[in-house]
Length: 112
DNA sequence: GGGTTGACTGTTC
DNA sequence: CGAACAGCCAACC
Image (cartoon, rainbow, N blue to C red; front, side):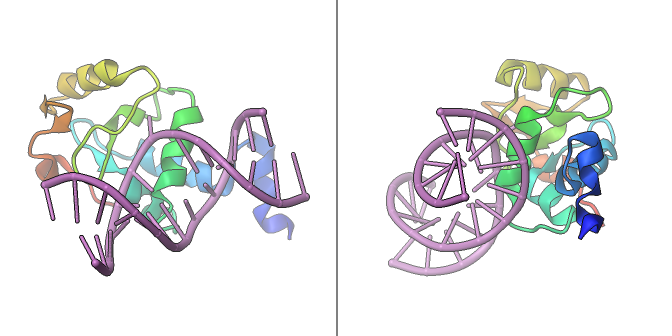
């Protein structure tokens, strides 16, 4: 039963660790969704939990939380504020319009 | 230790 | 297209 409990060593659950790890692989200039992350870690439908994780997660340079948007292309949220998120995304070449990622399906990064 | 909340999503009406 | 519902996982009270 310790197999799934060893995560306590870093304050992060396996769920969170996987999410951060996967999110870390998202190339610059692309975005992914909460649902895709959830599915990538083996918990499809746990998009809400993913959002919760990112919300409490410190903005690490290795963990670009700003590249995570809604499945619909909407920005979603950001601990630093939506403006900051937009700024970062635009700086990477991702166009954002009216709180929504332009041509987001094209920028969408799907894990396989 | 149980109930509520939240950076969500897909289905159904 | 918009509103309602039900799942999901961790944090909070």
